[in-house]
Length: 472
Image (tube, rainbow, N blue to C red; front, side, top):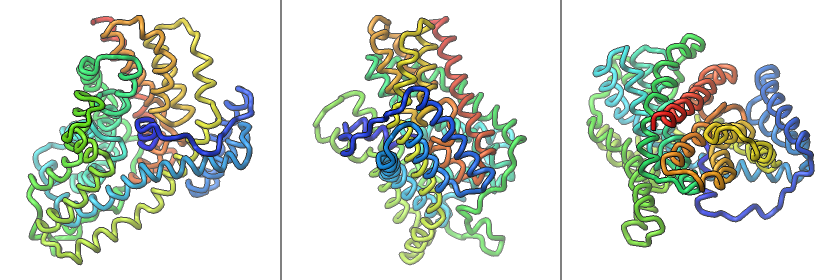
């Protein structure tokens, strides 16, 4: 849930112009972070302050409490907000356009009808978990979410099943791939830092990912749907949902619709494969795939595909396509501001240096290497809200230890770090707010569903790694 952070690491972006040097002690940093998170939760849940304003207040307050100069705290928040908008914001905008065209053209109806008619009530959550895993393999979590959210909402609406029962399996599939399975960017960072074998890590990652998705997805969704009941959001309403008198007569075919959904997936997967097989290559094909597989470009091409192919298949003229694109953006304005503020809060926590404090505290520990890898990543994740920062920090700390390990142990360490980097997503994670706003849940309901699901993924992934360490 940290696309902008990964992009900055991958492209070696320069540091902010204004240096930020926290002056607080270690205890002061930790207390400021805990108090800041508590204040944000109280503002939102008790005083009913809008999350955007609560996050902005909490971020600046945490920065000042941790010893940052007031101006530096504001600069840190602005940098994080801007970075999130540059990465996640553009993707959410393109995703909203694509999703609206998918719904208005009848393409979403085609996909949903196929899923609902070919899956029983019992198997539908498993189908959603499989789709989430396949879509999430090469993609950033945010990209996969904005592509799948129209399908999640329409499947829940059309099938009559609980929104949570449908959404949790798909989210679990996306999140597990995000943290555990190369060629996703997160695991690739650890593979590179620790010198692990990519192919072996991929194979072991899939072995760990399958039971993890099952436990955190279809199985957990049974309980989550009992704890939380929310209406299906009034998003992506199609002509099929308006009544028998408004039934659409033309819809894109299933194959054409599926091709549009998979287009960015294929482009990003091709880029990942090319980078893994020929890193640093300047060959024309590699250069082309590197460009086309960039998330923003891949999703932008999907929007263009939808304008032309979905529009024609759904009998939409140019005016109808233009109206669909325009109508897609106002509903996500609040989502963008909240997600951006979440990114700003995360950046403030990173700039205070709390991640470094945690890393230094456990660097000399004598516990199991795999447990240590998970523990460091989990602590940094909880403190900063960034899976990528957690991955990079843990990999950097454990790199000297990794130098003495064999190939299989290195791959297991990568997966342990990946599992830890997903632990306890809460209010400092932009992904938390993205899920909350799309599903229409409260902060408390999001903690009961999304946050617990992330903890299950993290712990189950660690258990899988430890079991494989005994067997292999």
